Image (cartoon, rainbow, N blue to C red; front, top):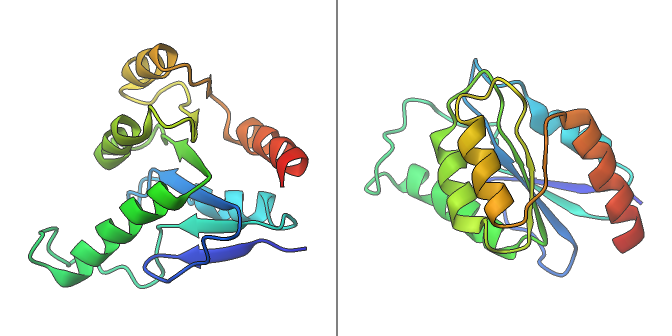
Length: 156
């Protein structure tokens, strides 16, 4: 039993349990927490959807008119829609405005698990939004990964 890792913009099978890794990616600022999550869930029979792509080109114009960028954003939105669970991590070393946007999009779905450590510049906003919508927040990524794994072992 091993998890399958699918990175953007590749296709995935929606018949398996899907875990989407939403959160900080800001290159050079954010830790590669997605790699840590992939390793934590390596022995589970799930598909991990990771938007951090190996061939990302930071020179791509972030515009609806740019086909590569549009494909990336569409893949992320489709993958979050398809996901059974969305792990959202706010790295304190980043601003992560897209993660804040995604929090707003998916806060009312019962899919979110949010990890927002002390030091994240909008932690208060994240905590208040999560409290309003009944989403528990954690401040420690390792503990969050452990808790998710324990929950998935019961579920999957």
